[in-house]
Amino acid sequence: MLFDYRDTVPLAGMPPVSVEDLRDHIRARLAEGWRLLALFGLPEADAPRDLSGNIGLCCVLAQDSSHYLEALRTPPLRGFPSLAAACPQAQLFEREIFEQWGVEPLGHPWLKPVRRIPDAAQAQARTRAAGGPDAASAAGRAAPYPFYRVRGEEIHEVAVGPVHAGVIEPGHFRFQCYGENVLHLEIALGYQHRGLEKLLLEGAARRRLPLLECAAGDTTVGHATAHCVLLERLAGRVAAPRAQRLRRIGLELERLANHVGDLGAIAGDTGFLPTSSWNGRIRGDFLNLTASLCGNRFGRGLLRPGGVACDLAPEQCADLLARVREAGRDARGAVDVMLHSQSVLERLAGTGAVDAATARALGLVGPAARACGLALDARFHFPLADLPSVGCAVRVAEGGDVLARTLTRSAELDDALRLLELDLAALAAMPGNAAAPEAEDCAPLPPDTLGVAQVEGWRGEICHLAVTDPEGGLLVYKVVDPSFRNWPGLAVALRGNQISDFPLCNKSFNLSYCGHDL
Image 1 (cartoon, rainbow, N blue to C red):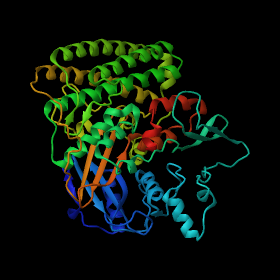
Image 2 (image 1 turned 90 degrees about the horizontal axis):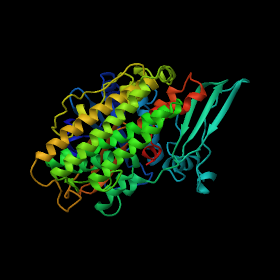
Image 3 (image 1 turned 135 degrees about the vertical axis):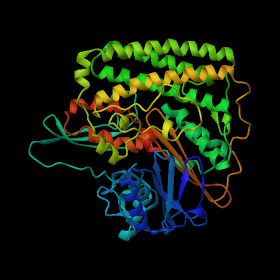
Image 4 (image 1 turned 180 degrees about the vertical axis):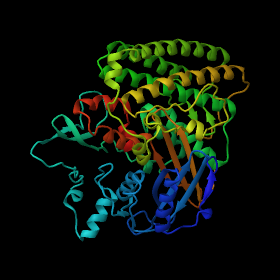
């Protein structure tokens, strides 16, 4: 069923289609330029959530040019023909469905765990198929991960992680190398899995927002915005214009802090210490601006369904604007120093390149996609509100390498500063209070309805989807963090590069482990 991205869809308007029709339709839509937003398991509302065959598939597609979405679902099934070989965008979603629900994508070319969950449904499904207990599952631990291996006398393997030499999240990287050249990189994640989507279905509604603010700690405002917008669309509510301005201020401050930090990290891995050291301090300036907005450097407590929890007086807007301008000048100067260094440009150019066709096939989003020439930005294709964006555009680059990802972030710094200028000036002149009512759940929600929210976080498009049950409670809550889509892009970017290029490539993507693992 086709629908405007701001609308919701009753399940009655989505009659189940056969899995063969679903597969053919997805392939046809992707060939027409649509994107796969999500593919997930949809349980029957009144059936037990086990492996008794009561799980169907639900698919949501997006067409950026028309601002339309399309949703389809299947009846319950135990298995389905895999799309992964023809549509690589679907491969992680299919593996996730198998891991969570035990519904097997038949013929999947890379059917491995997504998050290494010891009691995952796929382990139970294999145990049942084998007619006996699996030793690893019975012991409550994950089976050994089946890493891909390149054979040959001159091939060597390098394992990195999950514990790394720094205060960072855990993840495992397995390199297959011929000399110094990387033939293949396999990334095994899941060490940060918390069962977030399941937790969102349990307990009081007021727990959901604090949980989602921690989905990826450096994207607090992005995930909180997606959650609030999703509930508002389901409840048929629209946040006030003043609240919309404050939300965009929070999103752009988050974008600035993280882009500045990423550009400093890229400078550090090229050995260019001036920008590396300056940007660490400047990132802190933008985080402190967020703290001035809501009391928390990462933006926790800023939003609530229906509006925002904090507001700014005109004199606070003026103070914030002056500090934004000062931090913006510092950031622009620090980045320009790096971009005028020929040795830095030489190091970045040609390293970790991903071509546009590969980026499109993998479903990359955010700066990683725009650096490959793909004009994808939810702020322009699926805007949250009718707010002006004077002087801003979808910032694309060519080449898909570390230099292109650096230039994309650099251009987006200027756009974020322009938006903050617009919003803080407009906010100071607007009347009223943006704070939402105390009710934080936008209740009641309509029964048997699908809702979708897309937000352009600093890493890329964040997508939250929810399906309600016959009583208006949450039947499914699906979170698609941009890192879930972009980790395969990092693996592809390393092919043909030297293993010493990995830290620089990794910083240029700067993906979230917990955003992937949930």
